[in-house]
Each structure stands twice: as C-alpha cells, then as structure tokens.
Length: 352
Image (cartoon, rainbow, N blue to C red; front, side, top):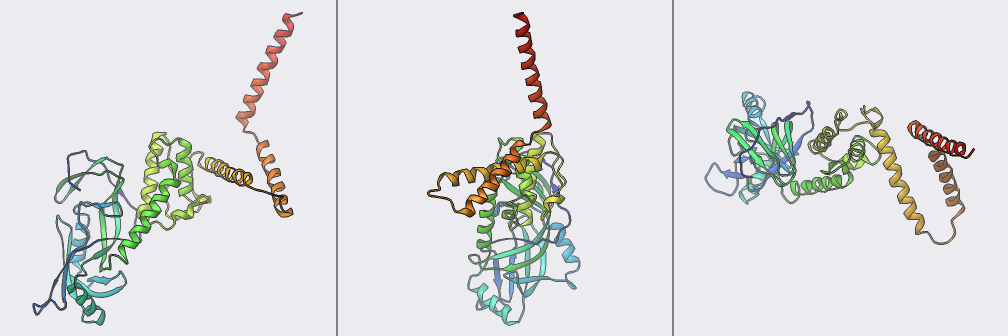
C-alpha cells in the first residue's frame, strides 16, 4: 500500500482488553549460527509485521504502532523477556533486541538449547521463515472503501487509501512473536476470519451504503445478541468491533445514537436508544413467516396429526398477533371512519 496525500481523521481508542490477536508474514526470519554454518540457527531476527501493508485480515499496522510497547518492553527486558514462541504455544527462546523501525517492529533473539528450540533452529535454517505476532490492539481506525486516512507517526505523516474496507491499527501492545507454519496456522486462521466476515456482510444489511434505518436497526440488534448472533461469536474482537463501528457510523446518517459496545452482549441487557428491538422482532418474524410459506408451498400429501396440531397453534398465534394494533394505527383508522361518516352525512343532508 503506497502512502498518498489526504486528510487527517481521528482514531478510536479501544477499552482495556485481554484479547490477544495475531498477525504475521512469511519470509520474515533471518538466521545466524554462532559457528557460521547454516545447519541450525541459534539467533533469529525478524520484522514481526510490515508497517503500512494491508495483510490478509484487511488490517494495516500504521508505522510506529508498536513503538510505545517496544519502549516499555525494553525497559524491563532483562527481568521480563519477550518470548520467542512456536505456533503461539511453546516457548523456544527469548528476544534480546527490540526496536521499532519504519519498516516494522524488528525483533532479534536467542533460541533456547531445549529440544524444541534446537528443532526450531534447524527448521529456520531449512527455510521456515514465517512469523506471527500476538498483540493487543489499543487504538484503531476504520476506513471505508476508497477513503483517504492520515496519521501522524514517529516517521512523519502517513496517508493511505485502499480499495476495500480496512482496519488501521494505530497503537498496539506486543505480547509475543512466534515461528509458525504458514499453511497450517496463519493461513487457516485467516481463511476462517475472512469467511466469517463475508457471512457478516450478507447477514447485516445495515452495512450497505444505501441501507435504510430499518436495515441499520435490525443489523445492530442482530450483532448485539439478537437471535442468530451466534454467527458473530467466533470473530476476533477487532473484527467484531469493526462491524459495530461501521454500523455506528450508519447511525449518524439518521441522527440516531448507537448502543454501547460489548463483545459478548446479553441481548436483554443491551440499552438500545430507539426502536431496534421492535424492528428486529418484526423482521425476524417476517423472515420466519416467509420461510414457512415457502416450505408449505412445497408440501405434498396429507399432514401428520402432529404437524396439523402445530399448524393450528401457529394459526391461532398469528391471528392473535395480527389482531394487535398500534395506537397510531387505531387513531388513523378512527380518523378515516369519522371522515367517511361526515362525508356520508353531508351527502344525505343535501338530498333532504
């Protein structure tokens, strides 16, 4: 992604969270052996992420995103080292050099003499050069398709524009960095996240540029725990929150106030400010009725006694439901009746 000119836009600070996310790149490790051969590595160096580059998650780390975290880590590196991990699971060494550069956070360290550390050194020398960092996002900014966004960084002002929706990580805490098998770990995780985001785009009509208020209200209620929200529970926190931010921006188009964010909300506890619950219930019922109607149209033969009994209960419930009338609807109906009666009376008087 190439920096270009543009306008500055305020980033959003995420409340303190313990959720660790992952991001990495291939061909990132350089190896060095104390004896000068390449049979096994004892020291590895890598850029944990590449700054200013959109990754497969649709994230861009803004230059300097890890600068503050690295400064804090360096202050206690002797007593609290940053671990070198294997597949975000097994510690295989520790980083002894941490520095933030324009290219990205550079990490260098010693592999341990354990069997896992020695095996990792051999694999690194054989060309296993993929790494993935564990991090906690602290400040981020969401950008729409084609939107220009700018950031003041330790390396000067940087401005970007992407063809798709992008989440810019402005500040993050570095937790660990691991050697990984790209095909078996990060790529698989990325595929799952991308698939979930694609499903979210289909399930949340409020994300569309031409969405109505009903679309937005329904989508927010669904994301915040309405029936069917389980589809969003597997999303990483950063991606889940970005969906919330996109819907919140849609709220402003209708001069509405979105509910407070929660990653795993209890739907009954969400404090909506408008008619989101009623809108969600109405559309959910509408979709359910459409599914029943479509299913009934394809039924052949006689219904079983059990199905007929269930259908009778449904008919009774629907009759009771359709008998309910909104007060405004009742007033409108009464007004129409009065106008009709008045017109009729006038017509009758004119013939006397």
